[in-house]
Length: 409
Image (tube, helix red, strand yellow):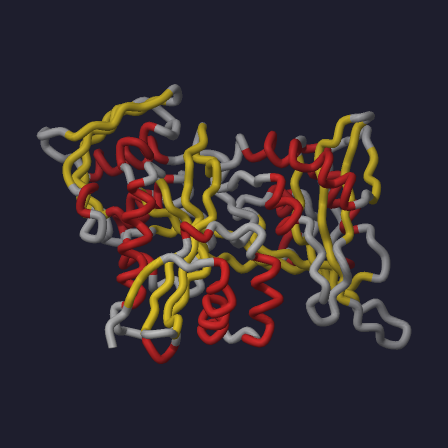
């Protein structure tokens, strides 16, 4: 039977979710309940589904973000999500058909970037995505959280309600994100339905969210969201504190919020997911070896418009590089480009000049946010060119701070 690829209607959302459940192993009986929640924010015209007769065998969707922060700027980005293929229909071209339709639509809408979190890392390089950011999962014994170095602060931390957080925190987030590549814009509905929505049923063993903000006078300069997982044993504290999100606008706010987290009583272990790879905390601890970290890929980026993307970011230094780009899946990108870049801006246009380096769309996407080193890809055999040109391009593309995407979407 042939496969039809098309968007879904609102009435088809439960079938869409049941197909997704069969791929990711969540309880398909929850599909109607999940549909009620996600139906309020889902962009049905940006869904992609593969149908075999009356059965959904593949799913994908897009959340349209106003922008993603890139080095020195922001760019509109298609947030790819809900991607799955039923186990019965793997390796039959279903995913390729959905990716083809989806990326063609992104191009038609003029979005220079697409981005996603990959459930499996080998999949998306086939479609031109490169791993542009990594995140850190950490845990630390609370008895080893003494700080040797701290930043003096004059403010205070206090618990706040969800309504207070909805009022004050989006502005903090927006101010911080402008200096941090890899952060996605959050609409008010995103804050309400995703960031600060409390599910009807908590994950097994976990408490509801605790919300704490740091303020100096009337100015909120940071916040932390955390949960507790309590497993009481006789006479001992065995609780795990999980940092869900910690955002700070100043070093003083950052230091004060971590001191608060480390001071919560009856906690044995403190953990967190998707923290930045260049977390300053490691340099503040008296015993940094106890801050156990595991790095993993997080944000994958796909460049849809090469000049638009490269002109939309800033660069660490001044320089010019000519590169030959291959892009089999989005062949409109393929060709030779001259990038004339500086900290103040850049121009990028097609050229017939001799190329200094050659790379594919995957490598260009990987270095786009400034975290992956072009020189490392060169040493891995993934970029071609002479040493001088690679070093020059590597210096141009680097950025501080390292890209960080704190939220799975």
